[in-house]
Each structure stands twice: as C-alpha cells, then as structure tokens.
Amino acid sequence: MPAILTHDFFGKSVEDDVSQLLGFTTEDERRAFLLGNQGPDPLFFLCIDPLMGKWEPLGNVMHESRPARLVFAMREAAERLEGIDRMVARAYVAGFVCHYLLDRSVHPLVYHWQEGLTSAGVEGLGPESASVVHAEIERDIDEAVLWGTEHKTIREYRPYAEVLRASSRVLAAVDKVYFYVALWAYGRAIDPRTFSTAVHEFRLVQRAFYSPGGKKAAVMALIERRVSAHGHSRVAAMAHRVRAEAVSDFDNRWHGPWTNPFTGDASTESFADLFESARACVLPALAEVFSCGFDEAASEELTGNLNFEGAPASPDGPVGWKA
Image 1 (cartoon, one colour):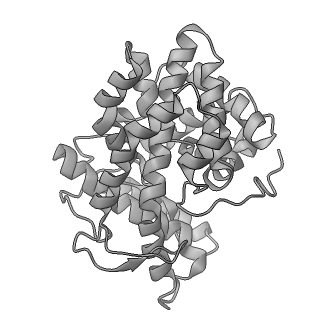
Image 2 (tube, rainbow, N blue to C red):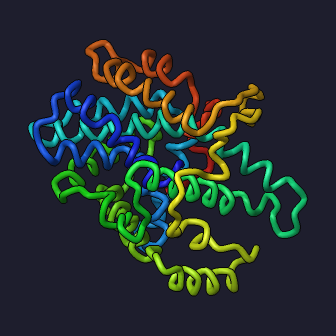
C-alpha cells in the first residue's frame, strides 16, 4: 500500500469529479468515498484486537487474489443494499477502486526499491526485513506528498484526525459490504463488525504512532527492537516524521531506469508519473464499474488479473487462510 496520506490525497484529487459522476449528495457519501481510498488496509490493524485478529488475513487475501471477483463482488454488494446504505456503500466502493488503481500503479516501483535494498548484502537488512523496508519507503513518499500537497508537516496536519473520518452509519453500511464480499469472493463468513472494528483499530494505531517530536516513536521503537526477532521496528518504519520536503529518495524524480519485479518490464517512470497514470484511470474505471452491464467478465478486463501489488494474481485464491 502507498501509505495512508498518499491514498487520502489521491482520493481528494479526484473527489469532485467522482462526486459529479456518481451524484454524491451527502457528507456521508464523500466521507465514505475517502474512506474507500484506504482500501483493505485497515484490516491489517485487526492484529491488535485479541478477539478480531483472526480476520486480519482477509487484508492480504484481498490484496493478493481474485481481483476481478473482488471488484465485482464489491459493486454487487453495494447495489443490493437499500436507501442511504446503498448510496454510502456505492461511494465507498468507488473509493476502494481508486485504492486499487493507485496500488496497482505504484507498487511495482516500491517493490523495485524494496528488493534492491534487501538484496544489497547489507548486514541485518536481508529478505526478512522486507515488510519494514516496504513501510519505510511508503512512509517517506507519504511525507513528501503531504508537504507537496498541503505545504504542511504532521506537526500541523495530524493523520489520525484528518483521515479515516466516517460516521457510525457509514461504517455500518460498509460492514455489510465486507460481509457479503468475503462470502462471494472468498467463500468465508466473517464477523459482521470486521471492517468497522478494523477502522477503529487503524485510528488507534495512527494516534499511538503520532510523534511530531520523535521521542514517543523512539521509545516505542526501542522496545519493539528489543523483542523483535530481527531487531527491526515497524513503529520506526511507519511513524511519520516532521519533514518539510516535497521530494523522496524513492520517487525516481530523475527518471532513472528500473525494472518491474513482477513482469520484468523496464521503466523510467517516476512516482508522480505513476500517480497521474492511476488518476487518469479513475473516471473511466468507475463509469465501467457502475454501468448496467458490468459483470465478472468486465471486471476481469478492467483488472487484467493484476492484484493490488501490480502482480498477476494467484488463481488459487486465499490459500492457507483459515477462519
């Protein structure tokens, strides 16, 4: 995932156009759309809940497998609701598609950097460090996007307060979508409160990680490193820093050559290029998703069987996920 702020600003950059296309009329619809731009990522934070943690694997399942069935199931679940729930759910699904489009576009560049760093032979920075390196790359880009978009750092712009803003009514409607999607796309029955719980946990983690002075994050990272098997800290990798720069070491603004690790294709595209490429896909994709003739075959054509990583999706589905 590009990190929380990048997805939020991506949604905000197309919000007015999407609102006009789909006819948003309420604040709940706009909030649902922006929440949708976080995609399945809130599910990763279920790990801190002792009762709901067993549903955390759904986040990886959604990211990795059956993208066409997932998008189609999302749309169908929203359309089968009624009244306000239906309108809110449609807005959420529109945002979810935006999340998918940005992930699919940007992730190959992120994985290019990740694989380069973890295979460089640096002591203590091997394949076991991949998830932490991934988070650091995306956090660095997140900080650059924040300064470039708002000319603010997290000292003035607090992620836990600015993002994931949705009413209980919105969360209840989206809970219904996730319940049906888990059944239709992946053959699993989940707790009906899975998504809303995940959002609450995501908010909690964002507040806990908020450390503009850096001291709280440093203490948390020190504790985590002492108990970590590899001596790495996810807190240190994810906690935003006060960084007043609109550039990142990983944005490839110099258009250097890189290789898509999933397809082997060569590229010189920058993060900005990939961001704009995804942005250009939003309105045509949403017009297709919410058209009368949209079915699983059309969804297959839309996704090209590429998952959220930008890689060809596994045909086997959620292997090993037991709930």
